[in-house]
Length: 299
Image 1: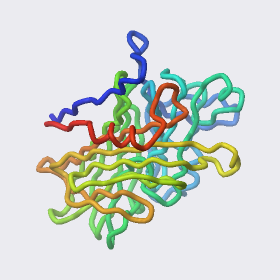
Image 2 (image 1 turned 180 degrees about the vertical axis):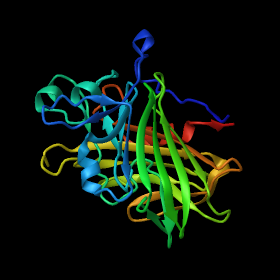
Image 3 (image 1 turned 120 degrees about the vertical axis):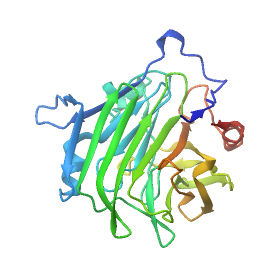
């Protein structure tokens, strides 16, 4: 099994015994109780908006003490980012929809506007050099395996005219800000290429990508266009298993890593993120990019 060397942020206070993780899927209901469920499956021809709106938060949520992610329950399956002010477990309270009162109390907030980008390490197909969403499937499933692992399963994803079985596994640890990603593919052709990466931030983006499948970006954006007064400084990073890297490139929207499965049909990478909302965290591109460059990857 692959192992990652975990890069911990020295400037962040150790969590000690309070270290925790959480993962959940919540249904949206009329009484707004938002009950937790273990899994949900939609047929492939279900209305995209219906799936997206049926789940509170629009998809499965996973968090470590520093950040949280949600995986959209639609054809994008995008990873969206939430950054905390203080290391703690809090998504069961805010649900990605932090109120002004909660923000004043020290809770975190959704910090990312993805638009048409690849967001924070979303997995995609690749067609004509462009990322391709997961558009045609027999069914889509999201499930919670435990308090630190979620899965997304696409049955019969039609890719280049033939079906692929895909399972995406996302996991976190209580002592690391990383999101660990494994994508298992069955039925792909040996010459088929896929992609992942990180987006460029909407404003004042700075970043890099290298040939080894490592990238970082830093900049500002307005996550909620209904609240233009809330501007978030965000840092994104990605490190792809060298065994999976085919090529890298920079586009107008993304730092893109083209990937193929290893001999076991698996693609592995880790996503790292921060925001300057975090107390005692990163607050500039130089420190963030140096941190991403310092992380190690090993088998």
